[in-house]
Length: 236
Picture (cartoon, rainbow, N blue to C red):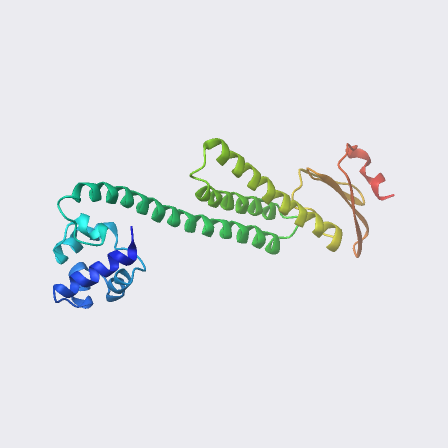
């Protein structure tokens, strides 16, 4: 649909009816700004307003969507074209709405994960729980952008995005361990010895050697098998 052409048509019909924008707005239950936006081609009336708008301007729905009075000879052809245009317009409007919701969810998910990392202590399980929850919320947002893809491609996109998101979280966690001496968040098992705490994570292990309360050393080692009874050897 040509919004500029339709807007000019609405404006001309309104003026032919000797109506101001305010009068037309009052009859349709909208604001003056809405009428102005229609006539300037910035946006279209809501579909629910098409029929009452046509009644007020004394035109047919076919005329409105064509942006001009349609003659009898081409009425059927224009009608078919306008139906297709209306479907495309509705789909684009729905897609735009879905993309907006998706973007909000993606941003919200990222903020939840960042906030969880910033607020909760590294050894608190809530940090990893809320970080993962943020990843899931963000993943839901991605779904709004890939709705038009086939199921296979959608699953592939979702899987890749979630894995990438979690890799970033693990990378941030790893940087925290080696740069500011903090315990890892994503721990599958935690073992405490006499002077050592052993953190088993999915990709690497961390040994926290406690020489004294004021002097602790964190060592990142390869993911390996270990004897629960002999973990103190890692700090010798």
